Image 1: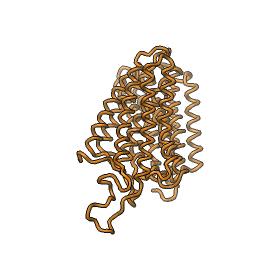
Image 2: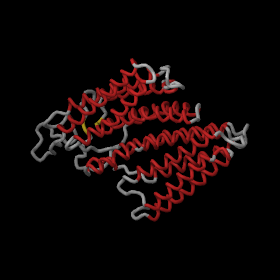
Image 3: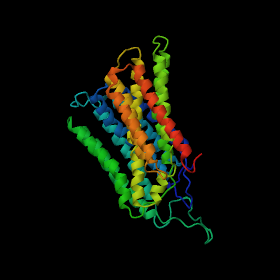
Length: 424
């Protein structure tokens, strides 16, 4: 570990290989287990349309905090002491954010309750990001490279030594846009504390809009945005596993209650099959170079890269809703008919995941065949129909039907993999 090294871009330097997540990044991801659990608990306590709206509204800022820090760590080498301290501070801020989720939005939306804590936590997290990008902007000197940049010439190096990538001016401009955008977003979060309910929610929405638009503005306005060796697809996959872990926990709790409720164990088994099939569908088509290709292949590829990264919002939310539905159905396993909200959370979450995953897989280097796209869309529609008619079924019948549908989809995925050229 270097104590004083400035942040340096992860230059491709002629290599097209992706980098990998650091131990600190993995630690950071684990903190968001608490945030996802709080969001799941919130939806579990209110399986109504209003509860779903609140769940979705709060999922966006939680996802965006994770995405913002993940992308900074993807863009720069992050082994320096100052970054470790900043990320650890971000982890604590994320824990505070998680602790306020349950009271961030009141049932009527007209009282502040825990809204101030939620807003202040977001403002603090944006301030950390502003500091990180501001420091990186100052360190990116032009001409030349930041200290210790990979590929930078060393003192006394010969004329055949690798020349420093001429990207620092673009990098400074990029970081400046991030500082302005995230600074504006943080100011809006802070200003919402002084606004009466429910107008504070409008400022929250505006803050998120500004922050989420900032990367678009940065990469579409900088003439030659710097290309870097990205491991963001790996981070997205790891976060997918974290959210899938909520379904695994639901199965464990269901198995624990099986002796007192005989039907709980079969329902838990089918919910595990559902989680396993969703894992299979996602990880069957992971492309570790999708972000690198987006950064090096022109504006149209760049837009596709944004679609891939931002599309994971619906993937994560769908998986979280599926986990909530799984837990609720296991709890009602002994009943002849189940609550409509529980069935719809399970099947609707699975449908949202399938549609969002399909959209993400359509923008990678080797997109899905039309036949497989049609099969996935059909499976998503079938899941939605099951959810809309869920009150007519028992939890066992509902989970068995969805599990069977997803097993058929997984079988189609395996056949497509075998028939696709260049695969094993």
